[in-house]
Image (cartoon, rainbow, N blue to C red; front, side):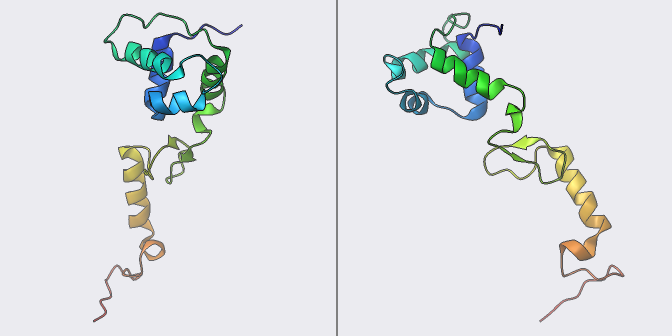
Length: 130
């Protein structure tokens, strides 16, 4: 059996995924009572302003969403992977997961200059067109 999910656990996931109380309320509209107020309480509990972080979430549909997002293989579900090839998930407008990935891509470009840009020639000189 899986462990129980607290307000703090759910709030942490919501912050990572960029979920707001309004988005969650719309998503769960009709499945739970007063979804907006419920998710505002849950997200506040995760911020440390209230001492409700240890309160358990009672709604099955909310628990299913949490388990689906935290389950095996969920780290990459709905997310693209890093352009450098490391396989780390990326969100939003990012192309690379970390500074190490940026450096990896920079090193690849310096090893293979002809594949990345038409400015480079094989001997390392630049061609300039006017």
